[in-house]
Length: 582
Ligand code: ARG
Image 1 (tube, rainbow, N blue to C red):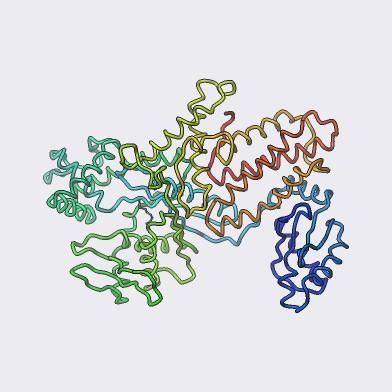
Image 2 (tube, rainbow, N blue to C red; image 1 turned 135 degrees about the vertical axis):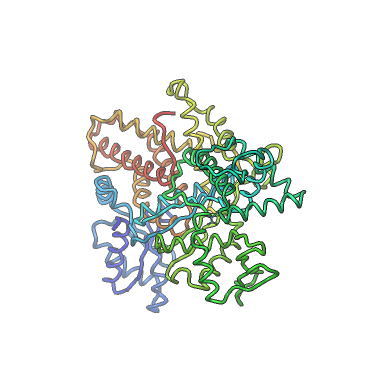
């Protein structure tokens, strides 16, 4: 149990011994630091239950708390707010305990298995800014859940199955009609034939084919046919498609690597197709499929709906499978192969209707037991200064690589040429750029849109990745300079700033839980900023290494180490790497 939780339980017992029973007492940081470090608001709630004035209740409670020598300066404010302060000795003791065992600053949860569907890159299409947030938020949620004791299996769920692939294969056929893949008389092994195509070609092929299909109905029809052939494993087409997936996947992996995003599973939509027959059986037997102009649909409307809920398109009239249906098959696959307690989808909020439809259709036939949670974790968009989803200068979709480059141009200016050797500068600028981008992306609540401002993201001051990296590196270098000094015990504080740091440290478990419950990293990004700026204030106000009071010096170094460790841990949760120097 974390120290803060234990503190809450201890106070709960004290309140009980004063004659009042409370559940889930929570010490709040005081709104009036001049009156105390914490405040207890429970007298207000208890007043209703015990039909007694809150102030009288507060008086009963403080009589008991006053007996406990861990607390000091206990007073009542307003109608019955109880202010409490921890004695310096006790606060120092708590910090030393955390220094010795940082598991005392985390509350683990009951272990559950979560499948986390995030990333969602599409094969043969460049990763764009829309994929950035899924990767960043998903990776960080995964790491947070693991830190809190869950088992999490991250799955990239590649978009490797729909019409875009049919379009790409069609366009390859138009450009290279003589490829063996299209030669019906070829009987050899396709795995030995490399198509003459690079990833850059693929990225150009898709937009071209997609535009052409919009103007040319014949072309679109051909693409449909090819999609059908691929989905039915027709020799040649199917084999070429697999090659395309392979080429594209290599590139996608590289981009995710740069973002420090790692998936446990690299499955795609197509991997769920093995379950399509079984899925058909389930849906047919439950009589929920309806015919609609040759297509098969599932009604998912519910009486309580206040907004339109169209039916889910289960199968198109030409037999091809929809995005909805591959998602249903994937649920079945995950249940059979992984048997999770929860499935989370970290996907753009604009797909919320899709997930409503899919979850309802899944519940209709109990694809998973009711206890298995299906949750769409939606997020807002990253916009340009015009407030619309970020585009390139000529109005096209900005690739993720292009975006990273823009930030890198800014962080390059921030690298200190006196500390970083010339041959390392580029590499460091890249690490800092990724940190800048990721921190900015995780700073707002996930549902909120935000504006892409590379100059601001790269700033060395304020709520930015570079500020945190710079400060953390400085803590590390201080600890390095002080290696021969005593460290391990906090015995005293000199200023209120240090106590504020200490109080911020012990609140960490609350922040982690809050972030987890809201499935958003903003509490964590705000917290690191707060802790770091408090620390920096303390750092500039004191000369730590030349302090003559030995106990104070040891307390300060120990405090530094705790803050440094928390920063490193939280940056790791956010999947932000810290360079050696910058
Ligand atoms: N590939 C999809 C896209 O780019 C995202 C996939 C999200 N995951 C899912 N199970 N539908 O929009």
